[in-house]
Each structure stands twice: as structure tokens, then as C-alpha cells.
Length: 104
Image (cartoon, rainbow, N blue to C red; front, side):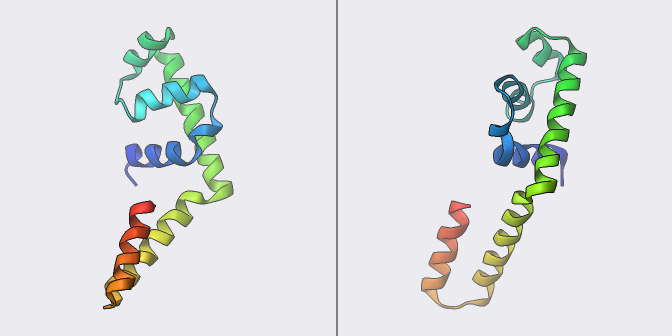
């Protein structure tokens, strides 16, 4: 999985478990595509401190995923629902599948 996509999913699923400061910095990296220097300048920390904080967040978020497997389950469900859509010809089922995929 591409690193930025992986970070986005990790943040979507587990971001609320980070501290407020961690969330702000990680969000700046993932969603605002800021560089380490820009993050450092924005939050009054050094580039190295921003790098270290992001590495700690990556490790913490990956640890949550290793224990809870929410992203893996999400991807599995998404794949199975899409497979149901492919094999059914029932329009009611197809409509329901589209609704489910939109929700997840």
C-alpha cells in the first residue's frame, strides 16, 4: 500500500487515539501535504522533532492496526461486497451494495 494512503487510512481509523498535538502534526503531513520543515515552522518545533513525532505516530497507529485489524477488516468487507455486486443480477441487491459501499 502506498505510504500516504496507508497513513490516511491509519489516521482515519485510529487518529482519535493520538494526542491533540500528535493529531495536528500528523494531519498536517497526511492531509495538508506539508513538509517536515513546514510542520516544524507551523508548530514551533524543529524539523527533526517533527520527523521524530511522525515516526512515533506511525509506529503507534500501526501498533493499533496490528492489534485491532480494523483496516484489514474494512478492506475485506469492501472486497466481498464488491464481489457480491459483480455476481448478482438482482437490482435490489445491486442498489443495496452501492449503498453499503458508499457508507464504508
